[in-house]
Image (cartoon, rainbow, N blue to C red):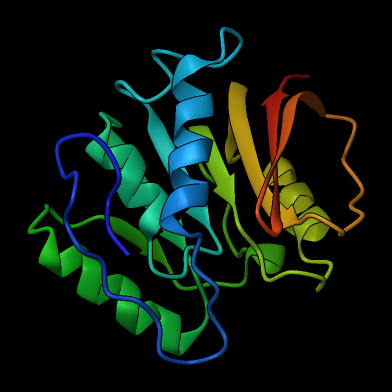
Length: 186
């Protein structure tokens, strides 16, 4: 695994050796970020100066990729101890100022957030029905900024329920994954 674009392009990321984490492949991540940068409804300023949240962060690859491409800040939500170890290892390897990690279950966050996020990545474990409860939790606790872009990676055969506060902008398939791009607005 490596960062595929931006100022950290080519930098290697530690990958999980346990079964619990399924990182987004370099190819799928490159597809996702090219869509964000080149779709007229999303980019090209989608990263610059933005507050990014990487939910079900795993290795942190999506958040670190956004940081590499100009995001102002990146925060991570992850609860799995093995994934947290790899996430911390990756953050340390980038020698960045402390980035915020929320060691919590995204479906039951304990706090509201005063400064909402502009770009949110959701990459939950496939077929575990975690997407809707985590989206609703972040919505009700004020983590989604008005006009935020919400990007989801789900299994291409996975049926998901999308809450009414999100509007689908684009859907793409990349290998075994389905990439969904939404805009948040009340």
